[in-house]
Image (cartoon, rainbow, N blue to C red; front, side, top):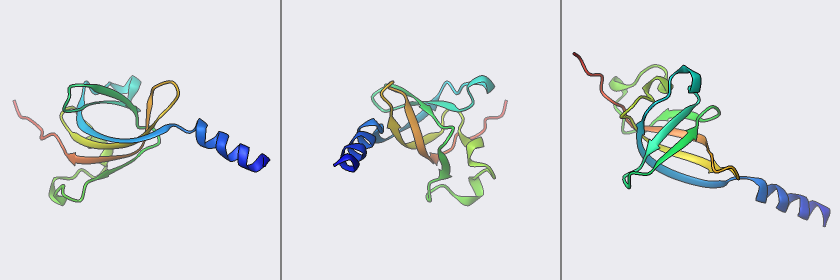
Length: 108
C-alpha cells in the first residue's frame, strides 16, 4: 500500500507532459541561454527551459543545411517541435527539441 501511495504521489508531482510546435522568437542573450520562446500559430508564446533537452534535427531537414551543433540552430525564426513537461509553476521544461526548419542566414 505504501508503495502504491508513493508511486501515485510521484506521478502527480511530475509535470503535465505536452508537445507543441512553433517558431522561436525573441531568443534571449547569454544570460538566459537555457531558455527559448516558442510562438505557436495562434500567436501565443511559451517560455521553454531547454537546459536538459535533447536537441535534434527532424529527419526532413537536409543534412547539408545542418550545423554541427544543433543547439546553434536555435535562433529567431527557426521552426521547432517541443516535447516538454509543464511544472506546477507553469514553466515548460523541454525533454526534446526537434528543429523542423532552421532560419536561413541573411546577408546585408
